[in-house]
Image 1 (cartoon, rainbow, N blue to C red):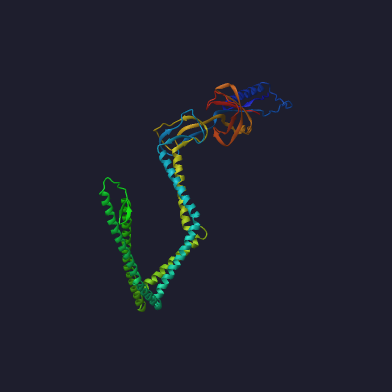
Image 2: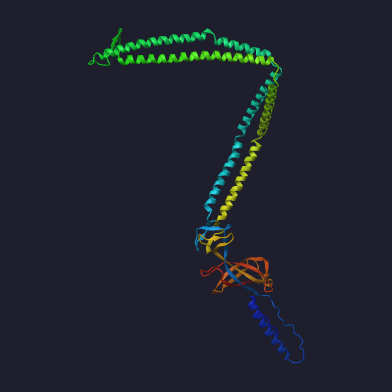
Length: 467
């Protein structure tokens, strides 16, 4: 007796039922064959049909949103703020919640950004000012050479003094003193004295005239006080007489100041000339005498110092020939690197204190409350994208999975909606196997092309992979 089973390949539970049925059929066939007589019939294979592998693969699956995520803080702390509620739709990178120290960390980020900006500005300034610094370095080299020349000349003058030069200085100082003592200076002061005396006489005359005008006006109360009064044949008002007196008084004060300045200047000029002459005589005496060891030592030290300054100036100029000072640039770049590292650390700390949505979706399970302490990695909420659905089945055996390919059409019936058949297609076949109850199984993901408003996350389904 021949039994051919046409149909589908189904789940393990259904397979066990079918196995029992096949066992009963096979045993029954054997009993019937035994009752047919003792003769062994010759097998007739002429009409044996070929059994075709025409099974459709059937498996159980579970309904899932196309994308979902368990979201957690990267740092531990107390929840300070929750910006969403369950059922709210959020966009990718939207802030969902914050820990207590978020504001402080935001300030740290602002400070780090300011330091990074300042560090970058320092580098820009070095590059922008390179030409100016190079010109300054050239000037420093020239000044250092002048200082070295002066120091070397002083040392030579100690060891090999130029007596003629010192004598010329003495002669020049004597001539300057003579000029300061010349009578022309005294004559100038005398001229100022004469002018001052004339001004004082004029002031006295103006004072007398002003007094007479005041007496004349006071003697006639009924007359116009602003009228002109003739004194010594010259008419003049009281105001004009007062102005004239004031002008002469100012002239007297100016001349008194000039005379005092001239007297002080003449005395100072003579005293300065005498001091210069004495200095020149002292220098001549020193040059004619044997140099003191201490003076030679100081002069030699000054030469060495001037040489060192010149070397430093030349080195700095050489460093600036091709751009900013390498040492200053290296320090500025190190400062910038440090600022950038501090900024990155501050941003990381701030990011760890904020919970952001990694995907766009709906808040499905909010597990935190304001004021609660939460540990790093502890799930704070579940976010799901319900814009489309998938079904995952993880019980396809190695025998069945080879009959499935990506893009293959699939019919899906949810256990909760047995009268609704949804169309789908194989999205992905996992390359990794699992061992379940002795079977090697693979997970297959199915993208649903149809939806139903009654669909809910986690519903079970029967999936039929069409031939």
